[in-house]
Image 1 (cartoon, rainbow, N blue to C red):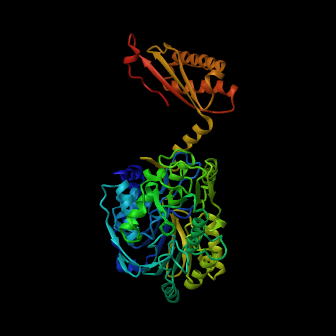
Image 2 (image 1 turned 180 degrees about the horizontal axis):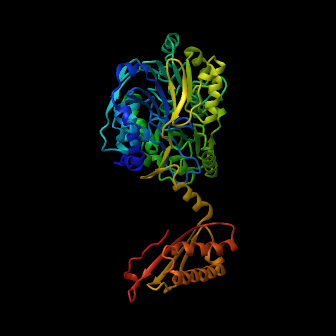
Image 3 (image 1 turned 30 degrees about the horizontal axis):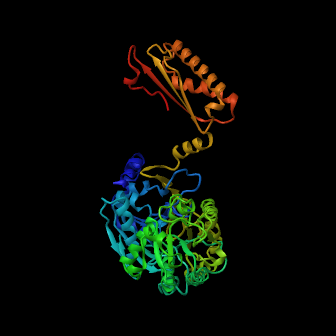
Length: 602
């Protein structure tokens, strides 16, 4: 199972935490439980857009909220995505009463295939969200048997000492919820990702009545989405995009229309399909996640679309331009997404040209701007027309803007406040906004990953820190974000690599010509003199080492060779390439091709 990596990577740290917390795992007496503090711990979601995962802890009970991934920035060379470090949860997994999910976006569910099999706890989510979770688990952790519990807004779920009440919120994906979590010390309100859209596509608005009721009764702690705190006013309704789409279809009635959006923005996809039907166009879906999400939404009844609306990707090039709409992934410039492949002319089924209009119906996630702009430039090179400006109303956010955040704060009037889901500046500005709305400065907290907010009947304070951080996912390999892998890739990208292979006899004499190769540093044709000097320096280093071998057994020949090479390179270049040295020792009279080399260093 692909999730097995977690136990391997976290084994040492988890064992330490288990031993450290062993005394805390006995069942507490009633008096101890009455005096316990409520702890809130963000393990992600407070250091950037994505990787959302939070913990509520009281006495012997732990509740986990969301388990998402984050997309890599440009410095994370070759990385597919980033997931939270689950060490603290693994060390305390027998105390986890359940995991509740707010909605089906990858920044809230994408890490589940890698973490949930190790925690093996029940998971609670609404119908569509569970459907999307099942799709991801089937793809990445097919052997794991999901302990899934379907919920809906208005339910009350008992999870240890927590009574969890989901309530509907409007977002850019159907079936999103926030949570009112009743604890022994009071109500914790988690808004999830939300906005206050008065005319939602599915008619399912944010539950103002419940929020007002909770505010009247009193909310101990409010945890709130901070994504759009820098945007003044109100976030426009999703229906505005539908009107823009209709105008676009009417204006470009003779062109083939390609629309790129988030695969999880099912409201947007639904509006595009409905508009295509009205304009007598067929729809082709491109991108694995787009196809899977639409199929799951149709299967669960969240999209009502006839089969004959769709055509297969293989039919695209033979279809009349004015009769077709293509909906594809790639709005964030993901390297192997449908839109990016089209922009490079590498897509199997679509070749773009003047006959095409491309609409990018999304804004770049912070950190993805260069990738998106590069894709737009490549699209123009293909000769097609591109609509991508936000002011053309081709995209609206699914997150509340500043005035909406004020409204929620005025309804709830929480005793304590923690901003979530944003970059650090978003959290600071949301904290300041809460203070403007009457929350005392000492009761609003900007937290970092692993910080522990302890709340008692008298006060709340940051009382410590637990292990937290990030792990990178690169194909089928995984590693600590703070480890050496990314540093090595950066060095290779910036400085190149220099490789040398040395073959010695048992006496330490060089018995074959040195093999030297470099990539991304210098071309051999341009550096004959440099290579000659390197060969001389290496041979001298080997001879010196052979003479000293009896007296200096701890000397590493590969290290000596590496130092000799660096000495020569410093005279020729300011660059410091990665130097790989391979030393092979050959026994007397042996045939080289039949030997297994002994590697001293890489």
